Length: 392
Image 1: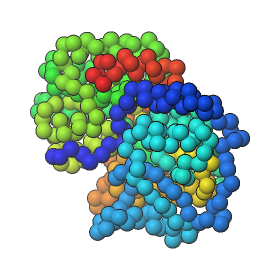
Image 2: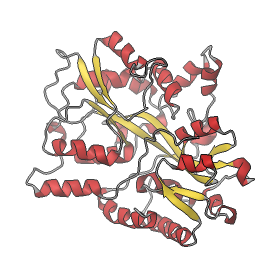
Image 3: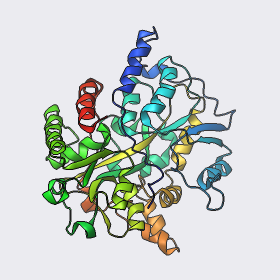
Image 4: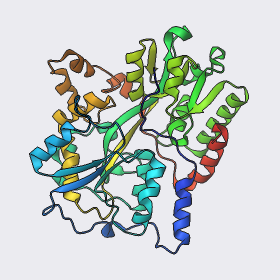
């Protein structure tokens, strides 16, 4: 199987964004933080029925016969009269931060009304005051249908500034037939029969939570000692050459070709991997797995805030959420979409409602947790230690 086309969880590039902030501060620009009352600007939504939406590649439904057409966006325009300028310009969280960060720091319009970024990066935007509060009174679908497990992450209590676009699970993928046994625990990765046949994610933010969970840490409130204990463990595994390498999305190719037998993996990728090879299994370990999201947010001074809020709420209509989920196959942040899919006359579509990697059951949910993000104060030293281990 060829390498999967794209993964939304791309590798952290060390302390690049911290360096950007330091460089901008040194150029005489104002303090990075923007108070809540200075984030908004004149909203042109009433007279300009349009908005600009930046997203990742392959992260929205497309027409089977014409990939340039996006059925749910077209339906939104027919329903509201709001035209959407949609761009697949986000390929890396840090890279995109570097693209719009200077404008936000200088308190300028970014030219974008709605963007999708991974929650560990969204935490920085929220902390810097670069994100506007959404008007939940204008978003009844969000209020009614947002997954309770995603409603109040550590970095954005009450989800005032962000709304999940899609979610996913970091767990373990492995070749059950080739390995000849089940994997149930993170500790199972360290068994001698997997020496040199295991990969871990190279990005700090992608890796740390699952590995800490394997050590029994509560990732909703992990500590510095939890982090260094995990790094000590990984350092020893690297020394013993137990870990084959640290990867980005190319882990999918390694597993598919048989170069590795087990690896850290994302649930969305696992669905596609298993479709091509039924021997590939994905497991949420007994100690737990990380539930993460990529979230929609409205940057400061966005020109069409109300239009952007309307689009966010549109995707929280269970019918629309189901259509999107059926295409992208990630964890749907709208549990009510499951009933919509289950009622489909198409057998394959109806079967998606029973997929726990799209709609986790209660047993799986009991093992999932949303990790607290690495803070700005922690990032420089933590990234330095992790990147040395991962060879970045």
